[in-house]
Image 1: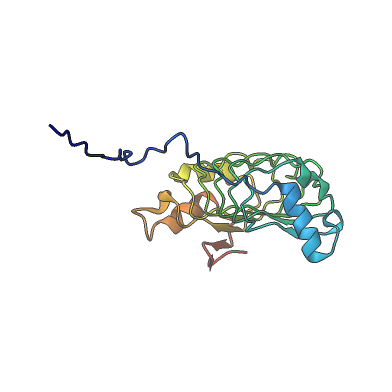
Image 2: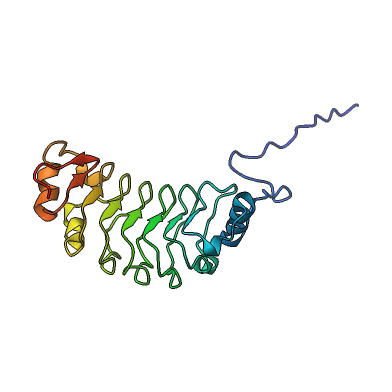
Amino acid sequence: QVELFIFQPRIPRLGLQPSSCPISVMPGTTCAKAIQWWEEKNEKQAAEEEVVKLMCQTPPIEKMDSSLNSLVNVKHLSLSTNAIDKMISLPNLKNLEILSLGRNMIKKIAGLDEVGATLRELWISYNLIATLDGLNACVKLRVLFISNNMVKSFDELDKLQSLPLENLLLKGNPLYEGEPKAHVDTVLGKLPNLKTLDGEALIGGD
């Protein structure tokens, strides 16, 4: 009598990764490395420059870190189009006027107390921000680009009333849903000194 053995390979369930085959994840670019690459590309010392753009790093920057404090002369710092999830304080950036953090993964505005005395523009569109806390120290802030985030309530605009805002980019947030025409009046009711809203000049703006 002959016994017949049929070999049936085991098929792993979908979504399960065998422990013998770990996935290698490439670490993100550090800010220090991004600064080094910027210096090599531009043949300049970043610490002496007024404009430093560290956007679109490959792999992306995941964390802001203290190496950014070496940019003591910077007036315009761009960290857009990376994978940053948290803002940090930058106490050495005494001259910072424009901070660009668009297209990241930031959930909360924070760390601006140290640069609030000089910051004039904050570009932070395309993130995951739901509230407008963290801006009180920005006493010179005139431009806030915060489109395509997660702001759901017009009441959040009350937190901007003490600021000298002139240009606000707010479209693409959930608070506009269901109010395609009325939102202009609602925003102006809370921020009457605006001159530009969502890229459109406002009639009567001084």
